[in-house]
Each structure stands twice: as structure tokens, then as C-alpha cells.
Length: 455
Image 1 (tube, rainbow, N blue to C red):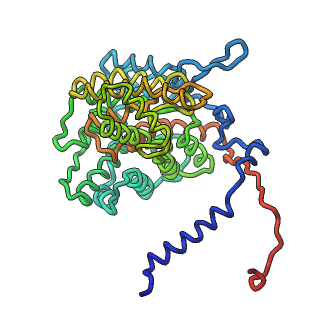
Image 2: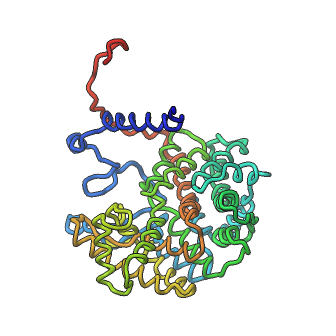
Image 3: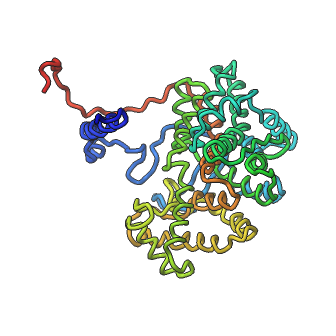
């Protein structure tokens, strides 16, 4: 019996996949020989300087007696410490997403009138084209909501008569509209998948213009549209902390690169989404949740620190969980001693855990936050400190908010769309050159052989 077409294709790609590997392999030592910064990072993990920005700054070290020394991590939005920003709106019991979005887009904190007008504009833009949900989002549903979101963003270009207009007012309009509708595109994408693929009930709720972004996310997601003030406030803080993180992160750099080519806003944001969905970038909090479930399943006594520490050691030695040798949520490409976002988040996470009756889970997270750096430092040579990053707690928060795993990375996108928009605008305003880094070819020249002469 002849092989099916599918089997034939699989056999062919398996065979020539091996050929690809063989003919594309580059000896690792050559990168050092030619001074190539792999991943645009030097031997100390520092990013290669590729641009200038006013939007945000990450501080993880300082000069002491002529030497660069690790320090407590700091994150500044437009020069303001994110800790001060969160304290400012949280102390006054305000939702912060819209206020900090204004800051990142325009460069200054808004006064009352400016904030009110900005929120009104976002509320007005929180709508989709007629029948878009039915004709686009509900067709060809996918478990991968990031792919669904990307599809929707690209399709929105077809409804925009000025899609390719790169004037700043038009790009700002497009960015504000996308900031407004990302929750709808994401949650509707999940609801369609949950209905058509899982045979569950279908809920399509309309957003409320006067509610905050965090409130609307919970309203759209939940069958009864109900949520508590604490739930919405904690989600709001999560959005603020994920909103922006310097120009060097993968998806923001992607935004800069595609913007520099002169592409339209929809294509730029779709490219950024494609970058963010990677498990090395935006999908890390999902791995934390999976890791914690694995620990709870296999460690007999979760109050026994020695048992937990031993399991973490096995995880690091590729003996358990996914056997990749990683303790997820620990360490960061930039921060060394601490991730300020994780520090801010932890206090609010504790409040939510107590409210939800998940205090035992919080105790376990806190224990692992303390033990994991010890385990890592005992078994590996590290050039900088290791601490919990924001992903360590964000997945726990989303689980307490009954947000499905499929929406974890899209929620990251609902926040980071603000940072991407700010960087797109900054790139358009300041730089008129396409980003084109150099690659050195190490392929030897070869003489051409006619087809009949090839073995």
C-alpha cells in the first residue's frame, strides 16, 4: 500500500531537515573569532547599543570606584520610577492603566482634564467594525489566541481607509484604537475557541466605555460580567507593570525594526505580537504555572523546605518537570539583584491570595522565591544575581482571577501594546533609516556545476 501524501511529506521533510541542519551549522567558536555578539548581547549579557529612547529606562547596575556593580533593579517610565507611579494612583484608589498609557505615549503625566479626555477617547474607540466579530474572529478559531489576535489585527487594516498613512496623527489614532480593542479581540477570540472547539457556551459581552481597561477585561471574560474591586485593581497593576520595558526587549525591538522599513501600523503590531508569543519572551508565566503544578504533584510535603529545595535541584539538573534545566520565573536578562516589577507585584498578590483563600499557594511561591536563587548559585557559575522576575507572580495572579491559560500571553499583549505604540511613534519621529545590521558570511566560494555533472 502506497504511503499517504501526509506520510510522504513527513518523510521528505525529515530527510531534508537533517540536510538543513548539516549544511547550516556554524562552528560556535567562529562567533568569538569574528567578535559577533550572539543575540545582540556581549559576554556579560549586556545588550548591544542599537538606539536611543526617551520612553523608559532599566537600571540593574551602577559604577562604583570605576567598576560596574549590580544594584537593586529600577524601571523608569519617562523618567518616573514605576514604584512611585504605582504608589501614586494606588494610594488614591485610581485605576492606573490609562494614566500611565498617556505618560508613555505623550511624555508627561496628564492633569485631570487631559486624563479625562484621553479616557473618553479610548472609550469611544472601544468598538469593532460591523460584523467583525462574526466574520473574522469566529471564523477559523484557534487554541492559540495570540495567532487569533494577530489575524484580527492584520484584518483590521482592510477596514482602515488610511492604513498606510504614516503621519503622526494617523498613527496615533491607529495605536489608540488598537490599545482600546486588544481586550475585545483577545477575549472574543478565546470565547469563540471555547465555544466552537470545546463545545462550551458562547459569551460575547460588549465593553463599557466608562470602565477602565482592567474592568473591561474581566467584564468581557466572565459569563456574569461580575468582578470585585480588588480583582480589577490587581489586574490593573499587572497591566501597568507589563506595559513597557525598554527598547531592547525582543518584541519592542521588532516594533522598531519593522517601523523602520516604512510598514503600516497593523503590520508592525502583528510582527510585535509574533515576537511576544514566543515562550522565551511572553509565554514565560505559563511555564511558571505549569512548574508549580508539577512541584505540588511530586513533592510530598510542601512545608518541608529541604524536600522543596531537593526537587528544585533536580529540576535544575534536568531530572524532573520538562527536563530543560530551568527554574521558571527566576532570573532576568537585565536585572541582577531584583526585578522591581516583582517586588511591587508581590504585595498585591498576597492581598489577592488571602482574599481568594490561596494563602498556602502564596506561601509556596514565597518559599520558592527564596530557595531558588540558593539552588542556582550552588550549582552554577553566574555572573550576576538571580531573583524572581515579574513572570513568577503574574501567572499566579491570572490563575486567581480565573483567567484561562490561553489568555496569559494575550493579556501581556494588552499591556505591551502601549509600549510598542510609544516606540513606533518615537521611531517615526526621530529616525528615517531602515534598521539593517550586518552579518558576516563564512561560506567559501564555489564553482558552478551543471546539473548533469552533480553526483
